Image (cartoon, rainbow, N blue to C red; front, side):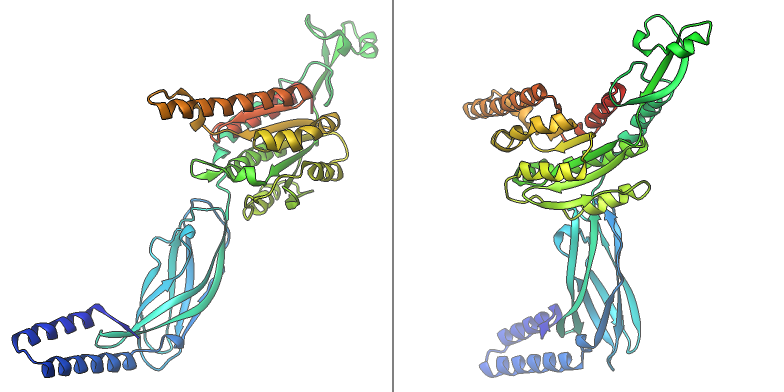
Length: 430
């Protein structure tokens, strides 16, 4: 049994009356009357266990977007039920108002909607609701927790989609009027045209020239239907938070923009999320099902507090992409983790594939490195500068090994990674 504010007020009135007419007998009598009224009120309240609760299945929602989670409650008892129902979603589900007033006559039902605005990606689950049924006097209530399991899958926000139209325009220019004019790895024949000064003489088509009055050259365009494998590092280094989100979320945003761009270019995009074992995989999915499959696979991913096993990841890459393609590694540039595990296998990857490494940088490092206001600030600046130098050294090592490296903050990593992909296309390296 639970008491209400009205019961407390009634007790206070008795205390005031006892102060005006002192005497233990009066206080005791008043206390007994209040207790009796509360017991009677609770007995007359509708039973919360006579409430049938059914949760309407909820589809996925993007991070930060509002959605209405629905409950259907039916009174199966013989008394009218007045009170409050609390829909017990976790705080990360972002339920702004999870309490609903109830006034249910016997046999009737109500549909209640809890507006959610999730603050975290993944599966946000709820197990129960709590119902408090208040008696007709408003002094006491009966309370029960009823099972009402449900969940909502919160998909990655894909904030970088605003960069997609501009990159698609550049892709159309690259794939159309701005065809690659030189022969190179990863290009295919586009058309014949008349030679103009500056053309590569290796592109001259001698057979076509013999049949024409002019020198004819072949033009080339980036190949379509190339393989692109995006590898998400879900190890402990991806758990570090940049602002309000872990590095893993920023890497997902970059992966989604690159996948949308590559699929529009006609390339086949696969996903592998791994650390010491495979956490998620998307393979062989074509548009328009590709992007929904990617966000569904990424949604439940969480950083694992283990080291990445890059030799095992390389084995997975070889099994999934036996022929040459673009391998995109989204992994933090952390000194020990990269030097001990990734760098020893990078040469083998570069020999088999075009490798593009993307890493999420912390924009706070630049601000810390520039601060000189106090002794503590100078020490912090020295530490920040050391981290930046270590990242620059790792970038240089990977570049010398033959990989393309993009190291940028969460805001700029997705467009810069997409630009690197377009540059590889334009250079005929895909």
